[in-house]
Length: 252
Ligand code: 13P
Image 1 (tube, rainbow, N blue to C red):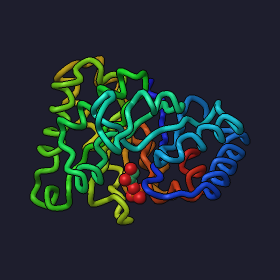
Image 2 (image 1 turned 90 degrees about the vertical axis):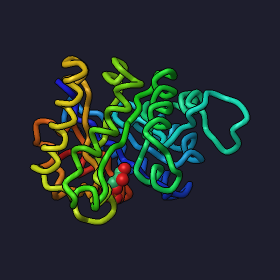
Image 3 (image 1 turned 30 degrees about the horizontal axis):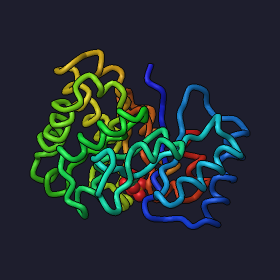
Image 4 (image 1 turned 90 degrees about the horizontal axis):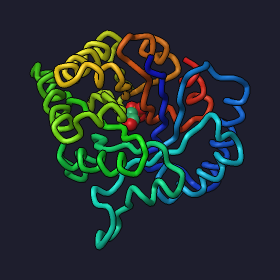
């Protein structure tokens, strides 16, 4: 059985004050009781990792894990501005998002970079959340499966069996921050396609990998999405900024 995993991605949002109130609200809410067998995490901007790690420790380490939104593909050295996986581990991270479409788009990250980053995360004992997804143009021209297959095949080539210790997030770019959520059936179809592709490599890996959906997930559409057999949770952007909305999605 794959556990349902719900991860907040704050993106470049937050402040010392708003972070403190968010963690307090979410941890207090989770203490009221959460569905069993699920995992929850929040991926915060790097400068806030230490603060949020401490807050989570103070309030509710049993429920909520800490995560980062990106990592360097290098272990250490002369890479000004980069953050190493070992540093994220030291700050208490359990999850690291790699290859988000915003990093692929604005920072020219390729599938090869993404795979190298995932290796760094795995080597430091954390779980990479590997993002894939097609653009509106790619879907409109009927190439969505081909595009996502291409992204996944690079990860399979580099990560091999270690994919069993990763999460994959299917985030169609046209659904991110647009309010245009993929229908549960459409998302399920792509999640199924990803799982079948992984099974071509190794059935065991395919059955273990959690595949999360991301893109305009809200409290009112999460139930239907999470009920799909190949959707193992969500990566939540905008709606995760509101603690009550994030809690509602975690309970969906
Ligand atoms: P939204 O939930 O704001 O659409 O963002 C999704 C996302 O990019 C999560 O990583």
